[in-house]
Amino acid sequence: MKKILILLLFLISLNVVYAADIDVKNVPVKAIILPGQNAIFDLEITNAQTSSDEIKVVILDSNWQSKAGTDIYDISAGRKATERLTLFPLGFLNSGVYAINLRLISTKDSSVFTDHQLVITVVDYKGLLETSIKTNPQGIDPRKENLVKLIVRPRYNIDLEFVNIHLENSLFTRDISTSLNGLQDFEDEFTVKLDPNTREGEYDTKILINYNNEVLVDKVEKLKVSSYADVKDTITEETKFLVKEKTLNRVNNGNSDSSEVFTVTLSGFKKLFTKFDNPPTNVEKTDEGYVYEWRFILQPKENYTIKVSTNYRTPLLWILILVLAAYLSYKYLRIELFIHKKVLSLKTHEGGLAGVKVLLHIKNNGATVKNLHILDSTPNDLEIPHEYMTLKPSSIKKGMTGATIIWEIPELLKGEERVISYKLKPKTTNINRLVFSKAVCRYKNSLGKLSVARSNEVTVYA
Image (cartoon, rainbow, N blue to C red):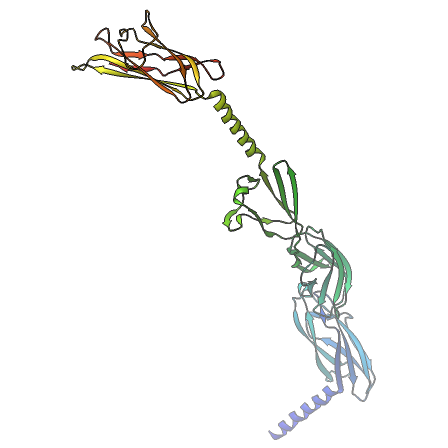
């Protein structure tokens, strides 16, 4: 048993010695690759044997193969050689980290060998790059030229040739064709000049990067357009006879919405003669007068106009018309002589009609009038007047339809009044209704012209 243990220890020590006869180190040239690309390593192989040897590289992974097919290196005793090993995947490999086992074995003595491991990282196309857009922290000012920088940062040491970069938003587009070095950032700096009317806000900017028909980046970043305020007022005034018109105009020359307030203060008197083309939002009475307030939002390039018109001409014209009308009415249309007729029915004890009493009230509202000739007619159902309480008539004329009573008054002074009254008896008791026509007075007014005044008509039911 003791002899067997000694033999095993001898064999193990022999293997260690043999393993030490070949030493290998690797220097990654291209250990991070895209799907389908080749991985490249520089192998530093040392032949520690006492004689030269041909050392063969065997790949112990079925997913990878050497590009050369068979790699055999002739290395002198005690010498070191650096050889390049190119590996390519057999079939499609998902992204990830792969450990590839190699065996370097002597072609003269198969018991002399060493194992070595290579690490290869396969990365996905869409995880290859990082991108960002840099501008002024306050955003792009649409009133001037702005510097914009696109930064493309490789995440792995992979060089790319013939890369197409496309930037696009509603403000501008940009296309770039370039090569990317896997060890440094790519920066594209350019200027952008926008329409000054461009509204503030964040604009979606699409970044699209293609390489060999593969999409490396397809993302959207926000590009900020800064706001600026530029609100201006313009006031114009036009004055005519007793009319003053003021136009207040406010325009938003900025690129963002602006909340605005317009105020106009009027005295209580001026308020009566002032109109606005736009109704105010609010009216408030203060110690200074009436404050009219308009509240509104101005969008970019929008204006708001208020017309204030103070017109004393029209009210003055109406006042003149009313004064003139009153004067003319007083002069030409006023009633100089006023006549009012009143009829009272007189009843019997049985309730029948015993008679009527007629009163004519005459009043002179103007200057002295002369030669008054008063005529009053009685209904045919009544007898001739038989009793006169104030002024007896000048004459009475009897006709087919009744009697006509005439009074003559030489003169009636200004403000003078007369009351003429008389009584009449019915011709029959079978009377239902009596109609007393208008009394007429012809006279000469203060200008000496013939004028006529008429009383009212009266109906009496028996």
